[in-house]
Image (cartoon, rainbow, N blue to C red; front, side, top):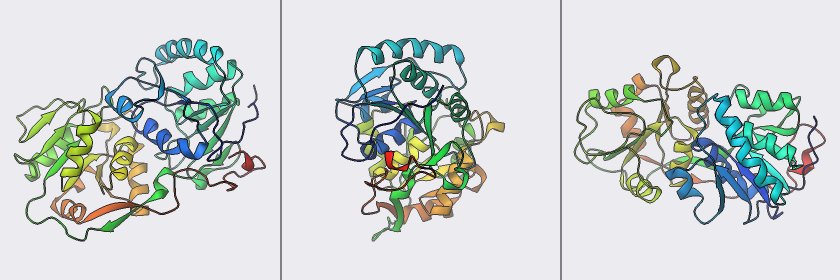
Length: 341
């Protein structure tokens, strides 16, 4: 199998695309990258039905498929069977995915429907591709891109990083007194983050003004403040914007959403050894954040009052001229295919 020729996917191209991504960081990245890919308004989004997708994709053309747990081959096959008839029934110029498992359903379906495909690896994969990326690279029917030039080469070209659009700057008027916290732990199913909750309580950071979005983390004690499992997108933005400091897990979706709001988050790394994630790739995103000076990324035991104070004194701004995607005519590949992007 070989990759079909991709059309011009630069900004303003107005191509009708299939845009497929699992919810969380993968969907957040694809939403950010879509304008730079020239996605038309009637492009088809393929994702899971969650509060995040309903908020980000409100009013758009969306095909919802059931949630796919990490490395769940049976659910991938079920999603493939739902996606393929839709892609065969309508005309699309190209299919693009930022992962994770949903890419293994959507891009093979696009290939069988005769639609050329592009896979952009998650920005959190600093050292090399994910399992999904390795599988798709081996199948050889999609163009492959990484957001990290350091490991590009071979089948992997380069796509501009979604984090390159932001920078952290001091606040002109840092908050006085005790910081109001919004704590959001992400919604990855089956992976609680008790160690972060325990650390926050140990430090005495939370009080009656704290707002918690716990996701899959069931509290073992009564927590001070307002406690929710999941909040709608509008409420999430309000709680985050009203807080002096936002503490989140080092997930791409959570971090990107907060950067979009101008917030310099404290991103805390989940660890596989504690049953908090399927692997340790969040450490890669944390290193990237710290190296680029975007927000504040720490391990659980590194979270302290000094980190909270630093976050309270900073905000994030969008760097002028960046849109999270390639500029017209920009060389983003390491081979002769660069002009396609």
